[in-house]
Image (cartoon, rainbow, N blue to C red; front, side):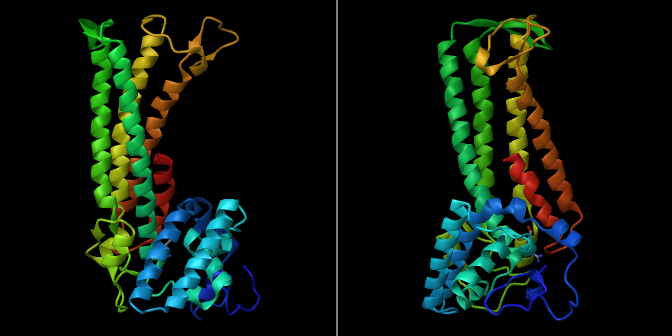
Amino acid sequence: MSTSAPSHNQLDTKAEAWSALFSEPMSDLVKRYTSSVFFDKRMWQADIQGSLAHAEMLSAQKIIGADDFASIQKGMAQITSEIEAGSFEWKLDLEDVHLNIEARLTALVGDAGKRLHTGRSRNDQVATDVRLWLRGEIDLIEGLLKELQLSLVEVAAKNVDVILPGFTHLQVAQPVSFGHHMLAYVEMFKRDAERMLDVRKRVNVLPLGSAALAGTTYPLDRERVAKTLGMEGVSQNSLDGVSDRDFAIEFTAAASLCMVHVSRLSEELIIWMSQNFGFIKIADRFTTGSSIMPQKKNPDVPELARGKTGRVVGHLMGLITLMKGQPLAYNKDNQEDKEPLFDTV
Ligand code: ARG
């Protein structure tokens, strides 16, 4: 951490943002342990989007000047191009994506950058960012699930007359159309997509305005920010707004079910292509071989998909356990929501 005198225009380190209670800088070990920037920087677009919506509202409410808002817009445009060009310097000293972007903004545009944080805390900021980021990912997943269903319908249509044994207890039971078998998975993925859309409704709610935990006396227009961000509403309780990550848990639960379906399909592909069954061939480009056992063709891709299911289900357990012991309101524990959530996506 820099020991030089704090510059007036720029927040160089976190300690400068704190009170006179602190007589020494944070230890390097604690700094590394508590920082999240090297994984939460992936939410940078959501962070900027949320900040711009907040600043627009502050200016409309005359809490900051229109000139401040214009400066913030200009600064954020510059930061966007720096991050996109890979020239933005992410600093561990500045802990997380939020402080990194805000410090850079203040370096670029001066006091207007500091005024951005009026009526806001990192606690409601991070809750907002995670929601915005996750909403975007859900929309991408939704699209992928549609494509997957269409592909399966195509395979089904081509194989209506192909008969394979249907199984119960993995014992040959009755003949079924391969098309019928594929359509079973279409149903599963359709429900998965419905679950994602349902979770999206509860993700797409604005916690901004909760501030640190107890709201703020600034006359914020939360509905306006929600509207700007395309969110369905505002959170009703500030303590809840900054602290609960149930939306992330719910998403991970829906993702776990989806992965269970991916895993079942993968398991069938693996069984069907084994010599003992010999129902299907998987194209060479999707398989691997062995030099000492040349008779083998290995279904590594579905095996990995089956294996990754364990990771996602594990993240569900991780996130739900993360939440269970936390008193209201925000606790640093919640910083641990990100890596499992990102990895699940
Ligand atoms: N990096 C923190 C997180 O991910 C941001 C919120 C920090 N708030 C605080 N009061 N320390 O949760």
